[in-house]
Length: 94
Image 1 (cartoon, rainbow, N blue to C red):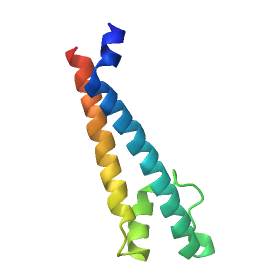
Image 2 (cartoon, rainbow, N blue to C red; image 1 turned 45 degrees about the horizontal axis):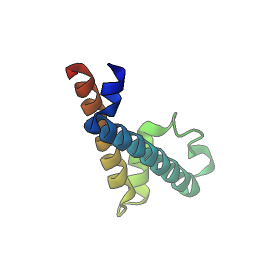
Image 3 (spheres, rainbow, N blue to C red; image 1 turned 180 degrees about the vertical axis):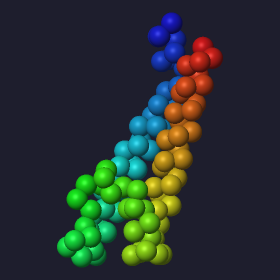
Image 4 (tube, helix red, strand yellow; image 1 turned 120 degrees about the vertical axis):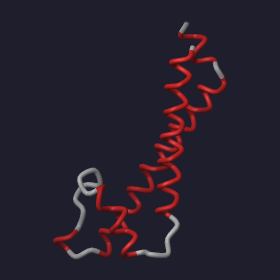
């Protein structure tokens, strides 16, 4: 049963898309955090991207309003969510 599940092409494509989009999102968040910390004052720096992640996107857009990294982050998160939905749907159907 498990061998058939992993052999499905849709499942493989969805798993690869989920992995690459998660990796891309992680890299973009790290780059955004480093750029925000470069521009921020000493007391306003983000110590950890995980703890300051909620405000990171907004702060980055304030500092760099004409950027494409926010769009890349949004697209990669959307692809990740859609890929995970496809994986769950394929696991439930068969």
